[in-house]
Length: 619
Image 1 (cartoon, rainbow, N blue to C red):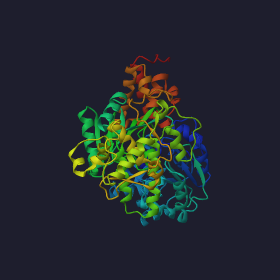
Image 2 (cartoon, rainbow, N blue to C red; image 1 turned 45 degrees about the horizontal axis):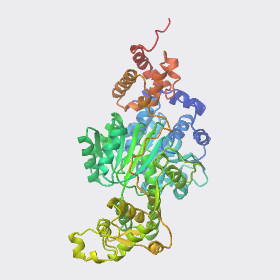
Image 3 (tube, rainbow, N blue to C red; image 1 turned 30 degrees about the horizontal axis):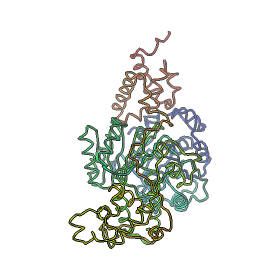
Image 4 (cartoon, rainbow, N blue to C red; image 1 turned 90 degrees about the vertical axis):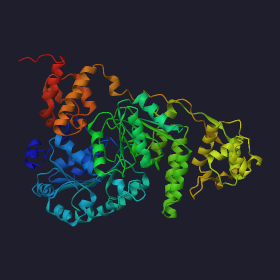
């Protein structure tokens, strides 16, 4: 890597205002809410804890100060793929960036270390385990460091869904580099997690910047699971044909099967899970980033820090364990601010499986109690009859005054019904059959099925046999799902799937309190229009759009980077709409900084000219 060549690409930013760096290097006219305040805090040499939603512009909060302050900004990042993605994007901007990780050979690592020591780097990305090595810490002491940025800071929380033990050692930065400002950033943290981040990273005295958690461009939809594969295929075909997306599954086998199913239906779908060889995972992630319209089917191991802006949907075929996990995973959709969908189906077996996993875990009572609360909050979002976005934001301490108008419960308000009697029948059936059977058997008893298993058990003579024949099996599944979700029934902790009564069901069983149940919808939620239409729906010149995308793809292939690293779709769309006639006009478009204008400007102007959309320039 020729660091001297990189150095010549970047304008001298020393003693320059952050706003100038934002415009000249990154091509943006102004900071987003809170960005400017955070950046000025770090430039002044003070510490900060920053919570911003995914796509809210967290990276600029440390990248701009690293370019303004003397020395090298060191960014602690948990994933190799994230480092490589960010460095590739920064190099395109003319910024002197590099990473230190296990993918490098000895000479590459030595070259990077020398570049740090000689002041030829603006930003250096490093994994926490690499940073904490004595050799690396010694290197940091010898170098001029402008700041330390701890990305994905929620990884330090032992109560979080992405806990990483190496993050616990990062408190050493406060002790050994007290004069260097530190900034911790995350998109996902409730009040408990925020407090833990501040304590473990010695940021209790730092200023905390908490942006709103709302992602208004994401439409939230949750539906009962009937035939998950068909539901997924119908959803993609109806709304996301040819679009990039992520599908999350709980098990590796399900990941493989779902990817194979999608491929058989003509989609480009790739599996991603920890059981695949590292080279296969790396190749699949690379294809997802570089190619158009790729769907990744993955376990939760995929996606942290992925900067791909045009993910149009995130689908869950299994229930996440917490709202933190759900929020972070769905947040990988629509980073470009354009309309996207967070789609999920869930059913009774999801609830039973997660509750069994929780109770069977090796955690102590306190751990299990916290995890139960997190799962209950997740289930509450699924069964809610009011605005999902309001409930989601409320969990993170944020507020939305009025219903969002862009979630399924706002678009098609769910109906409720008086389920008091049905609940009594269901609970009584669990009791009368000895609390030893699963939901399908219980439904057969309630509906009066004369099958061999019931005859062998002798349950055709219990008082609850046949008393639920007036309701369908799917209606009864909905009743049992809501009873388990609300904690009135629990799955057998031994793992056999039998449903058992809990203490909270007593007043329901006695009919002492009325019970309102959610009626499962039978129609698919319509797409919302409150947040505008997608870019592809706004294009009036398809030939021009395809030509600009082809130009971008050719440049990306030539540079060996994903297309969005050249320009985001929003920038490309603005080029198409404004039809700039020269470099000065092109440079006024958001997302085009000085380095990109110099590097790619003529190619895009030539493409527009060939389309006949730019008038010949006067001499």
